Image (cartoon, helix red, strand yellow):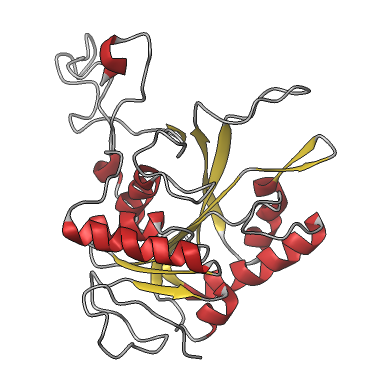
Length: 299
């Protein structure tokens, strides 16, 4: 099936049919239902599939349904993603909570059996913590979501050195034992752990668009760097305004994505154009989170 694709560098050139690899650096962006888009793609193409599906909470870009119906739709999409996943690839599925009559239902818990029954293994349940959001009156205000990292097997791409963060005590050394005097930590930095603190994209965020729930690019960058190599293909089946696309392109990966909302797809295309022109504003990786108690917020 032919999809409406987008080639940034040669917009007037004949568009490739789905399943034909685009040149590296030329993203494939489609305004199309993700099942229809994935239908024509070959097996095992993507080293990383990273996305955040609609949470079924009534946002403008989704029609709210029962949790059962939502889960059935997710099963179909996830099964296709597994088919498209490279044998050494990863799927990162980022979700929050479904709220029903003031009761929260963690969507990653609901989705766990879906991935497990398809033969995937859960490597991490990453907690994404952010400082701003809606204030709740009858329960604690939610300030985190989860990214579940799944792989097909035990042989998967993993580049820890690419995402290390500064050690708390970089010059600390062993004071006794056989390693006395040697550095006690990795000189390249420490493992960032499974709790990640990135600001969510609100009105004062440099990446803010009309999308109400967009990914911060730096969050996806960490996944791209850790779980792919340069030249690998990254796919987002719920692309939105293209944050996953931007993160992949910034680091020399091939980028594919689709979304049903024409205005979001056009925003994604415009963001890619800005990236090419060197005018796209993104929050830098590893920039400290703003702290009002510090001079200039710690920046």
